Amino acid sequence: LSDLVILDLSQNLLNELPPMGFFFHLRSLRKLSLAGNRLRCFPPEELSDLVNLEILQASDNRLQTVPKSIDGLGKLIVLDLSVNNLISVPNEIGNLVSLRLLNLQRNNIHYLPPTMGALSSIETIDLSCNALRVLP
View 1 (cartoon, helix red, strand yellow):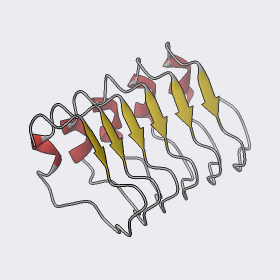
View 2 (cartoon, helix red, strand yellow):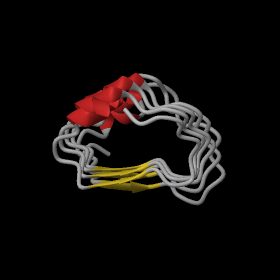
View 3 (cartoon, helix red, strand yellow):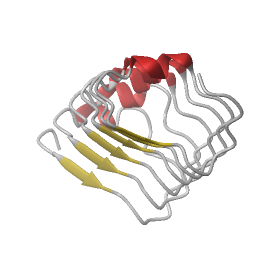
View 4 (cartoon, helix red, strand yellow):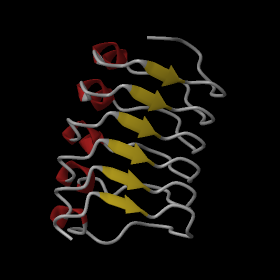
């Protein structure tokens, strides 16, 4: 699987991702779709193994947190975490300097980290249908 570029696991009944080490061999992966499952979390350190990932679609799950290891995805251009159960976004999101589209709509996000101001390449942020109380 070391040459795999696209992995689409969307619209399944996944409650969790494979055990540690699964993503380690997917270094060429550019697009990962996990949309429409039942995921509650990402393995904490696994995401940082996806060094070439450009598109991460994990909408319509039951995600409650975004791991701090998200900052290891330096080439990420699109991050779609819409329609989940997120209440916050980690400070590390500000390290995604290549990010152009951030979709966080239809969650339960109360506040945003001030580091979001560091998203220098961002073109679109969708925060509709959340519980925002203040803006950074």
